[in-house]
Amino acid sequence: MSKAALAICIVILLASVGQQRVEATVVRLLTDFVQNNVAGIPLIHKTEEYDFDPEISKKRRELYYELHGYRGEKVIERLGLGIDGKHHERLAYQRHRDEGHLQGLNYLQP
Image (cartoon, rainbow, N blue to C red; front, top):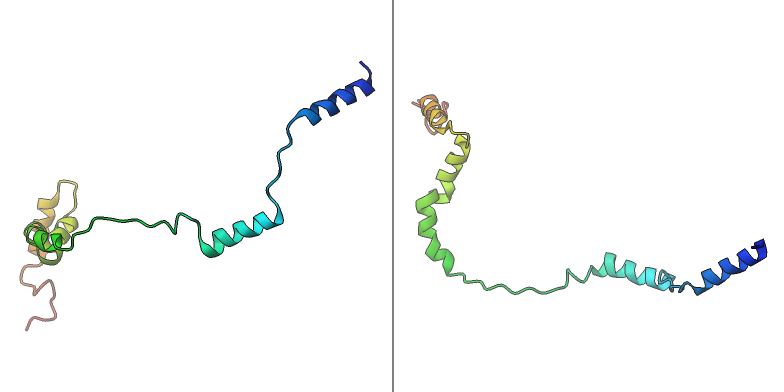
């Protein structure tokens, strides 16, 4: 096969491959830029609806106070004691350390 015949075969092969239209035109780039950077992606503008009952919080308040104390005092104490199984030793140490202190402070005592 000669070089000319090989060149013709390559040209025919390339011509037969479907050419896809390139959509990266200047107008497309500008509209994408405005859409994504100024207006926001369409996902942001999607509206969601949730079933919400504001009265449930009043019903669950008592349970929360019972489990975690007012304003979560018991939760804060439990978090401060750790979760590695040595919470009893830490609690005993903290109680011994704070014995005689007014809320853990020295300078308010007479």
